[in-house]
Length: 301
Image: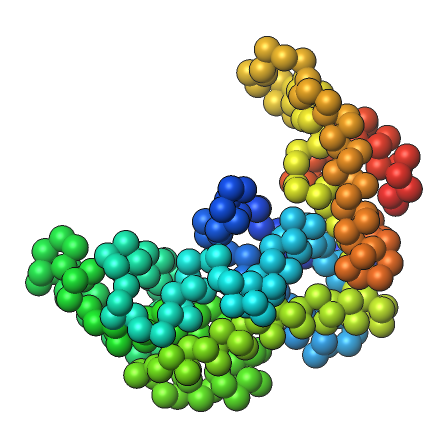
């Protein structure tokens, strides 16, 4: 029996939406920097460690904007992400109730089996939190848990979010995880500096892999819009015939917006990685004839 050959392309799509409040610049959620120090760094390490592996890695420009924003925040000490700011606060006893609630809500918002249970000190913090809730009634944990507890909590949250490869090669992470508790302001400051270094080194690592011919880098429309729907709402019926459409036939200025999003993405990629992208991964994989025509006019392969 003849067996036909097949080409397998591994495409890793790195994307986070823009979590920044346009008025204040404050980050509503921390997923950009957390995934950057965990999954994106681990992926770079796996590709570096296995030189025969070939892959396509796609970075959405609005994700890169936010990574660069975080690098600048940490370098300047102007932290607009609430969790990073609280990691750096010298005295966590001085937090108000809203800040305490933010830490206690956010720092247990994890996959417990994968990110809390494997670390006994972190699990103990969770158990103490549940005990305070049960013994003191609603909101008791905001009042009773000390600044020392909160310091350990915010430290362990960030330790659990570091990539496995970084935990094996970063002496600071080994040291802090072995220490387990009683984290000082100096400990947390060093951890914040390491987070900044991981973010700063991330894109150069992927750029080096691309320049060595081991991966291909591609991009996406700048802020990840669904391009076919920007051009023509009716195209939705090609995939879902009975879908309810807006009364307007199209998004105002949609074709121009798609072209602008593409032009900005191509320029962003060339600036950050030193050469134009080899191709594009359209947002959510969404394509239409008119979208393809716009891509072709801009030389996208």
